[in-house]
Image (cartoon, rainbow, N blue to C red; front, top):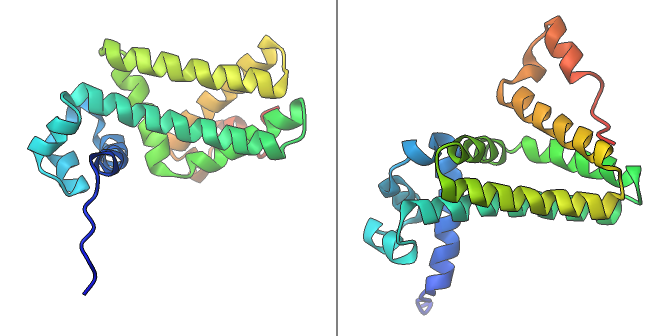
Length: 184
């Protein structure tokens, strides 16, 4: 008989944040009942509120997890990407691959949408976006103009991925998708 291992509150907290990322990605902050997140995590709603006293705190933790994954992908790509413009290209390719994960894409889009009306979410998005910018600037040594264009291309990729533009055979889709992204 295998002895039962009890998970710590920190383990449960981590599992809850992972579940929150998935559930909030599909239904957003306002459209997701905490009961759904608790059910996905395999815990009671009461225990959810012991770990995160408010839904907003849980949502902010999920947003921060999404940004942390993006930053980790950028760091991994930058470490393997060489220097200067090569780093921007490597991080851009890593971002394209990240967007293939629907939870990652939807999590980002939902975070931006929720930040419009919720100051705590807005602060988290700003803080984490600043971390992304600072890392990209340090790793690439690119000019502000290059970094602005790189992030703008990434936001366009978000929109195109969300609408499934890669499956649309129309002039506008072909023009916006262009050749495979270089993102330098």
